[in-house]
Amino acid sequence: MASVTKKRIAIIGAGPSGLSQLIAFKQAEQEQRVELVCFERQAEWGGLWQYTALTGTDSCGEPIHSSMYRQLWSNGPKEVLEYADYSFEQHFGRSITSYPPRAILYDYIIGRAAAADVRKFIHFRTAVRCVDFDDNTKQFHVTVQDLLTNKLQKDLIFDHVIVATGHYTIPNMPHFEGLSTFPGRVLHSHDYRGADEFVGKNLLIIGGSYSAEDIAVQCYKFGAGSITISYRSCPMAFKWPETIKEVPLLQRIDGHTAYFKDGTSVDNIDCVILCTGYRHNHSYMAEPLRFHCTSNLYIPNNLYKGIFWSAEPRLAYLGMQNQLYTLNMFDIQAALVRDVFLDKVKLPDDDDKKRQEDIAKWQAREKTLSPEDHEGFSDLQTDYLGDVTSCCDQNTVHKFDLQRVNAGFYKFFHDKKENLITYRDQTFTSIFPPFKEASTSQIQWINNKNDSIQGYLASITTA
Image (cartoon, rainbow, N blue to C red; front, side, top):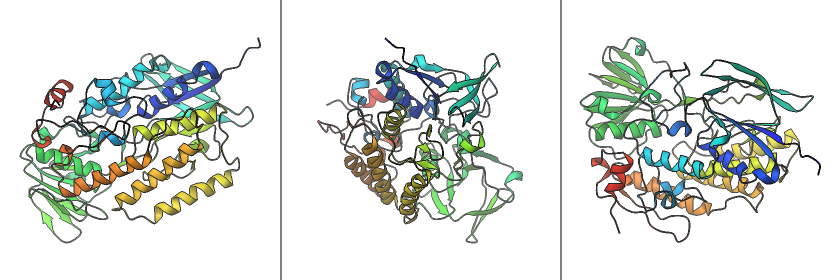
């Protein structure tokens, strides 16, 4: 029997998207004879969902990856992100609520990866330093560094590279007059580690999206004195508690007084928290392969089907979008990457010009949406994932009812508009048969300050 040459495939990152990719390939491992190598610069898997009290750099001098904080609870119902082949009930052996804490989600994500036996493919504490492509051989040259020994391995050869490092790690730090000399504390949400640090404090939060909203409500829950949210383009316009208010964009800070675009001001500010988003950073990629993005677009530039590097589709980027869908989106994207890289599916268009036309078509639709049109963006990402699913090998892709998920997002948006404090107490129905409704908690979210797995599971009302 003639030997079969293995395809060498590098996956950068062992967070949720990288794990989805490993699991997708694992399903075809024996049949397709691939060699999977995953590089992860952290000491453990799970990516952003790992919590650490550290900020700045870790023990190896690498930037801290995680932006997670104490007492973080899911800000979206678990039903809209559940894996098609691995349910929460299967993992925990019981029904749980729709809005679990971070520890539950982390345990679920790595539980699926452990069950799939993909840890053996991961090289931990290994940082990718350079990725280049040889146009003659049509192969990638990868340089990595062992962070424990500082040794470099150069020119590792791969047939394909998949970037799965996420984009919620490098803070976007805008300039505001007087901020650099503000006498109180200034931090980005990336370095925020818990609302219990700000009990009784007067906070200025700069931002107008999910981080600003969640950190404001978390700080309210734990007893911050007052919270002023400064938005750039439009207010979030929730029914805020009386100690939280929204104002237009900050213009300058003088001492402990903040001045805003509408001419108003707020005195006695103790702390400024910048919830101003993140920057994509793929500096280890050679320039012709490097994804640049100043904002987390729903339909990114240069990524065909939101995944494949248009000029060289042997390279894929996972999870680069601004995300409503998360875990299940990573699975769908990973399925198409697997099918294309293993020659089960041929990309519809081989011409880069045609690929750019496909990208432009989706981007034109995105441009018709206003920033506050959450339902419109949900429809867009639902249709996008339907398009990606239709490109996959229909015999192996995990299919689920995207319209049921989209309806879940609509209910989620409605619940938040009705009451930002109680929306996490609402229940959702699973999108998978037998369409079971989630359990409830004996403790309302606003009063529940025990986010441990044991404490959370003990609080669930039994049927």
